[in-house]
Length: 320
Image 1 (cartoon, rainbow, N blue to C red):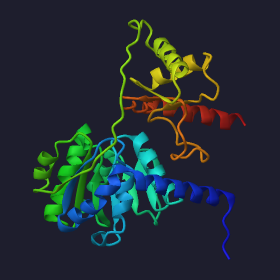
Image 2: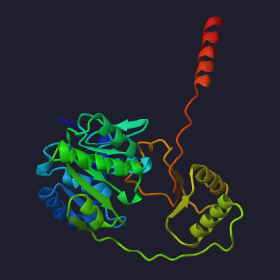
Image 3: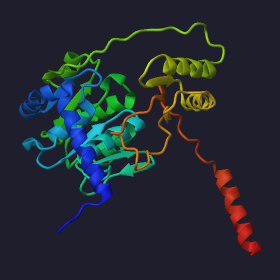
Image 4: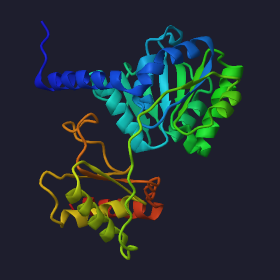
């Protein structure tokens, strides 16, 4: 008789919580229409506001469709941080960790296995997949998420997928999702594809301006966050230009007297994956900061530096 350890029990409990949340998301009311659209056509456009649940609910909802025929779903996410988070949330809703039925691929970080049915990939990875296998054998559906961000890689990936469907695999299905997209224009590009629209949830927003123009951005942002935490309950999400500014604001906040229970959580693409105890379904902290610009690529190691290191190792071995 099989038994469940504490780790598997925690994952199952979190999976039940994720499933309950998923049923309450606005996108749930449009899933039947979306399934029917993809069953009758080879492409569809989904327009849903932010927070509707399209990124984490739609791939799992389409996994059992007959037309998929047991093939994989490839979900394209424009940013590495979003790709990891989406894969972790979908895996958590199944009571698993990334690398089982849901996995992800990105530069220098891959979590997939033979059991993986949904692969969340970044734009460069999709291009390499199409270069290695233009027909995308074994893939039944390619989903382009957040397509309104419009990058060259995403446009090229969609064009190559349309070409593959036209000349190599007629059964390959395409789904384009966005919150602010001109659905009719993209539907015409996909060959008069149906447009499915989902409702969302609107919340009141109050705009409060800083009292003066900041001379030092990071210090003024930290002071504004401190005042916001003291003035009202709830969490704070801060957008900053890049990882360097996020780290400086984090240091400024760590030196200030924040309300008890406040946790600081930086978010940017160069961060390693979260520890096992802090899954994507956990409650966010009171204050977090994320980058609103793509992270810079790491600087490649020059040949001279590699050569010098080899010489140093050779001298060390000779000394012994």
